[in-house]
Length: 333
Image (cartoon, rainbow, N blue to C red; front, side):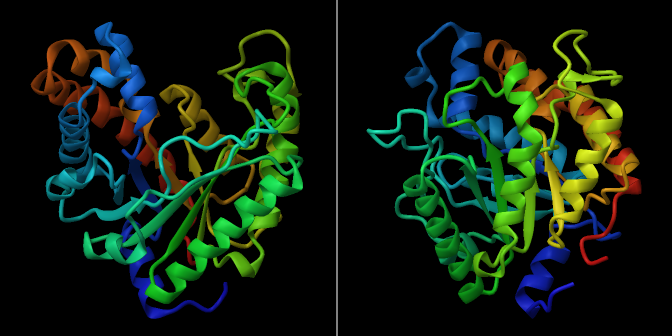
């Protein structure tokens, strides 16, 4: 393991459980959550207010953090939820703006932007134990876009180093030719993309402390899994397990899995496969897989009904995940 400073070590300890495993909940969704709430209410996205968003995040934080090692929130709608956090849970704050910019000449390429008026110092002042940056990355996109994404990551890495706070980099794969990320064609190229991206951003110049990564396959197109849809297989389960191993070997930086919006059973199977493959994941930062089933409840019945849903279904989802993570590996091992 690389040498680590006192501030970074303490931050990582705070966002981990007593076994050094990160069992964190993600509640930093912004545009996607507004869109989902608007759809359930049959209104326009702009009709979902900051108060609607804040109350949703406060409910998730209040009910789920007693069962999580940390919560990830955003500076736009999530700061009011910090006070609802259980004392046992650490705090991660997002740095990026919601969504991404698209360069005029490359309509499918994605560039991350930082939240205006926000920085690592302000995040620390709000109680952050760690900083998270989401980076959309296609290793095969234009040099201009990838230079931009890489420079931004270096900037954030250097800022976190100056402030002596852990830097979690979330890598999300996409195709600059416009393939549907949920489709069978993208599933075929996903392992290569995820593995190559992790390899690149493990370079010391980025100063990343934890990589928040997608599982390297789409389980719905993995023959032999419970999640397999039954058509258009991209790989067998045996091949998929090998991709998990390859992802693990390409970098010594601690890795945690993100849920990427999939349903809870699919995410649970993905985490189980990582452990089965011997990939030694160091935990998860799981958002929508835990709480998205409650979106219709909140949208139509209000915050109290949503809290009741979270206390039942939401807590059960997180406990099922925690059970699997008993076999995960500490970030310092």
